[in-house]
Image 1 (cartoon, one colour):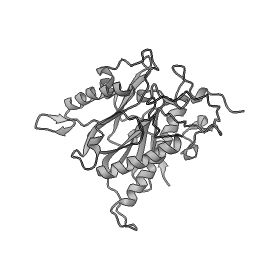
Image 2 (cartoon, helix red, strand yellow):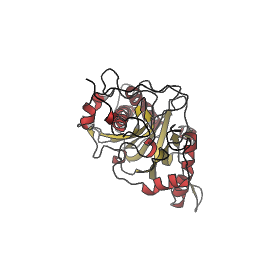
Image 3 (cartoon, rainbow, N blue to C red):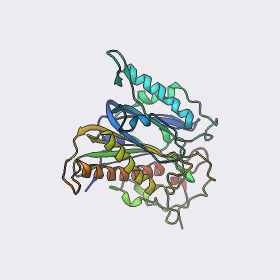
Image 4 (cartoon, rainbow, N blue to C red):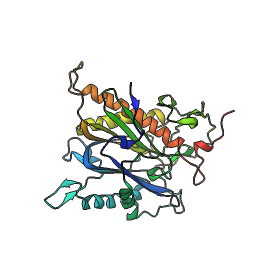
Length: 335
C-alpha cells in the first residue's frame, strides 16, 4: 500500500527546491519550484480562463526536454512578470538549455491565478523583487501550507484558499508529490456534510483535528469571469519522457475534479504541471497491450491524482482568514 512521504510535501522528491514571496498588503505572492539539474516536464490545462507561459514548449512533439523552474503566481496576467527575474537568476548560475559555451536559456513555464482586488490596490504592485526573493528563499525544506506564495490571496468557493502539499511513496519505491494553489470557483467542502469532498483520502491523520470538523459554509460570492483558477505542480523521482509526464499531469487533474466541485469551469484557468527528476527508472512489466512502462505510468498518475486532492484539502484547511475572507478554521461547526 502507498505510504505518506517523509514530510508530506513537494520537496520529498529530491532535486527540487521551493521558494515563496508573500505580500499580505497586496494579498498576493509567488511560488517558484526550481530544478537545478533540470526535470522532464508536462502540463495539462483544463480551465477555460488560463494564464500561462511556455506551455506549448512542453508539448511532447517540441524540442526542449527539460525545464529549470516552474512559476506559480498570483496577480493574474500581471503575475507573469514574475518569470523574468526567475529566468535571470537561473541564467546567472548557468542553469538552462545550453546556447554556447557561455550562455544558457533557462526554461521556465508558469501559470497564474486571479487574486486581483483582494489587497490594498486592485492590481498588486508586482516588481522584480518578488521573483528574486522567491528564488533566493528556495530550499529543499518541507513546504508549508496555508496563505503564502501563490496561495496568499486565494479564494476557494466561499472561503479562504491557500497553498497545500502532499506526497506518497508507491509500492514500487517511486515517490509522487504535489503542491497546489487553491483559488477555485467551486467548493472544496461538501455543503451537506461540512467536510471536504475527498476527506476519505486522508493519510496518517495528516489533516488533524481540522479534518474532523463539520462546518457551515458561508454563501458563495457571485461568479465572475476569470476570477478563479487552481494551479499546481505534481512531481516524481521517476524517469519519464515528456509524453509520460504529460499523461501524469492529465491524470492529476482527476484529483482536482474530485476535490473541487465544480472544476474546470469557464471561470477557472486550472493548470497542473508534472516534473520528473529522473532518479529511478520505471518498472517495465508486461501488460495486456504490452506497452512499455504503461502500468507504471498508470500508477504514477493515480498517485498524482490522490496527492493533488490531498494537497487541495491541506491548502484550505491550513488557510487563515484574511482580507475579509473567512477561513475553514474560523467557520462555525454544524449543529
